[in-house]
Image 1 (cartoon, rainbow, N blue to C red):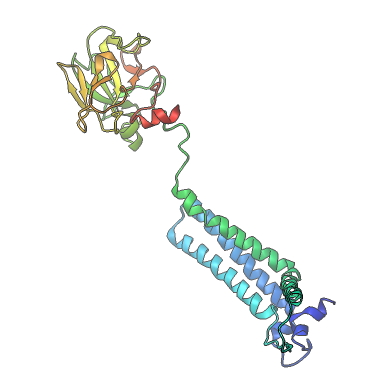
Image 2: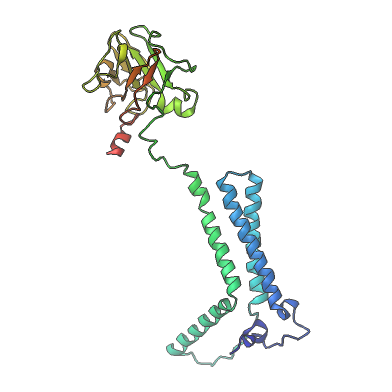
Length: 312
């Protein structure tokens, strides 16, 4: 059977030059071109929505691109079904007796083949529709993917402390070796992060001066406490509360949330409370100008012990 004999007009038993036919039925190629244009515009709008969402564009741009994509793809699909698909009513004389199983299977096969042939005869529209819906399906995942935020990568195990980072206070002033008296404490940050959200979270460190001589808190940390200065992460290893209380006579850092106590003279080992591990110690040195600086980042994750277990 030729393609001309299987068009919607032929299937309906009409001729293409019949004056009672709608213009769309007499000019199917023109209608197909219009539908293809609608689907192309819809696909472009859908892709534009994905790009706009990814760069966090203005709300009206998001609404316009998403609405345009759904509108034009929908119009194209509706027009395809209305103007290019065979239209009934179709009447088939039936035998009064029920068909047997073989005849039912044969009829089902014919119906499936006929429906598939309608799509196959218009590969351009089928391809555009499939491409548009495929892009829409991918773009629909963008809100979920973007809401997850950037990948954490190594940020869960490292802070902004680096080799040579200057210790500064909340105002950004660098800490000089003579600034703190023995028994004093101050919260410090790596220079440049003191007023950032991350600096206020994972970078905050307590600096304590225990003596005027170099101080060793544990084996392997011989150079970490120059002129009696020791520095520990301010995040409690229990639930991440700020360990900001210092008991000078006992030389203990105290977490105000659940009363965990850390011995600053022995590597901040917890001596009381629920904290599961010591506060990480920041290795320090004093440069030629007398300013305190970091030898490196912490050698272990700061904060709750979950991250330590997650790294193992």
